Length: 410
Image 1: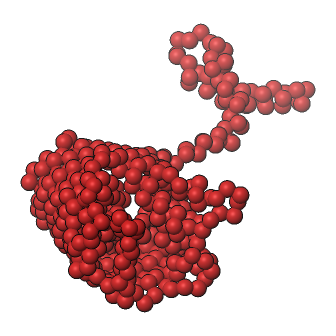
Image 2 (image 1 turned 135 degrees about the horizontal axis):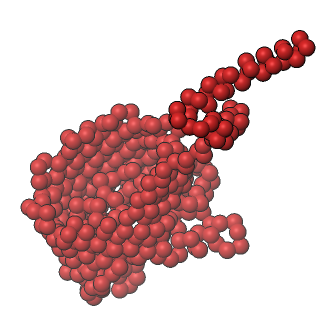
């Protein structure tokens, strides 16, 4: 009897709080607490909440950017005989006379995330063929049955850039692949230069490199770069040596000033590891002053004993958003037989090798439509203290050209 009474008391004690709870959750005039019991059933699943579900990790956002360029021109060589005779001397990309020419059609795309990125620029046209010819002449033949160099560079399709980027920190990045050179005040894309034709200095610097490049942002004004590459415009490399590059760029935000110093040092030979060491030192300073921009480019190139030094001063003035004028004057002096030029003659090709002083002056007017289309009209005169130019088969000390360029870019 005692045990039965104890069980009843214990049951009352346990059930009393539940009854009180049910009454508190039920209106006073509710007939009974029993109908409310199903609503409390989820409480039996409480132990499952001890293990919270794991939220999926969101992929880092990817920022895609792209750019496009169509570059065409028509040039007339006033010194040419016949009229299709292209200009001689240190002219880089504008080499076709009396012909409408597709200079470069390019598409570039980039993807950027917090930790990695990539960039690829592909193009075709006369400019691409010129760069491929330079690459073919400095690259080693492939060891596979098909000549890799001839297959890769024997056309007018160009892989201008293709590199991947890793970002170990917010201020340090590593690039691997092919990228454009850091030297020169000018670049491959015509729309990004103040004038259409490239300077003679641009003719003497590398265009592309394949290898590794480290970029460091010291502060918002100063950026440093170091690279280890095959050499000048070559992939695969033509020797077992490698070229070292370094750059420092000083560009304070909102100052309009950009100052850059670049060097490349390495052996550029056709075989083995011997040969001369090639040294390039390139300095560029540009400054924006209201509607005007001025710049100075100085280069020193030494390949073994021969060397040359040159400087180019340039300026641009934007009268309106639609119309601008640009001009350039430059001079190059070579020493120790550093200058070599070949030009056709009735009796066969003639080659001059020795010392020379070259200078040129260029004047250009640009008409911009909707910030994405531009027509450029340019007059240029090239001069030398030696007979480095020609009219037909007659050597001479000057040449004059005029061109109209048509650029569409996004």
